[in-house]
Length: 338
Image (cartoon, rainbow, N blue to C red; front, side, top):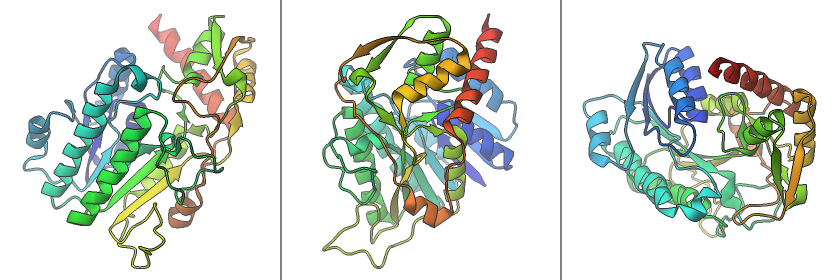
């Protein structure tokens, strides 16, 4: 089996590619290695992947349609997993252009690859819990409408879902969108709160805690995320013949299209999360409490009933276990950098 993984040097892409290679699957990895966060970290992830002869890497930007088409020309690609995107809710407020190029133009080019390569059996792509935006129904359900995003990042992810449906409808391409909920773990993104909290608590710097700490997040450990994706590989969506046009289910369709939440299903209070980090690190955090930031939401909570029903997915990593793995990795990784 040949799988194209975009964003292969990213956090989720790296862990997923490692797992695919361990299953003796050939992986063609694509990443533009941008400097949104530490390029050194991305290259270190790549070094590990490139130790496996079944991994083939190409540095490119998905918005470059010609280079992407040249890459896939004359290749057999069974599955495409699109994890490449400009990430970050807050960053999108000041840097909108990068989101248009990566998340919209790049995604159209991926859809075109799937259309042109009629051997592609399944497109799995990253959406985000941020699409729920102003929705206050808890837990977040894929059955609920998500028409009121509160950041451009969220709007681009909702757009990806709409674009995917169009290609499922027009060209019968099976597409599965995954709304990720606050993924964390070793080799993670330095721009994420759990990473910066760890760094600053260790270095005895002040951490910024928004909404005065009154936040809850459905923190999901990376291994659980990867397990969910693996279970979906050979489960492409099919046409839902029972889909009701008069009462449409947003997560399904008469076309081969499906949207899932993929999260821990157990939101954690932010202050409890920080307290767990303090215990693992052995230091108290110096905290500056601040009001809510633009584009942020107070709580995320994933309803994963449909993903559990369809592929038996259920996360198994507690927050204590996951943060222990992360802090241990963080200490070892930064010790090697010295």
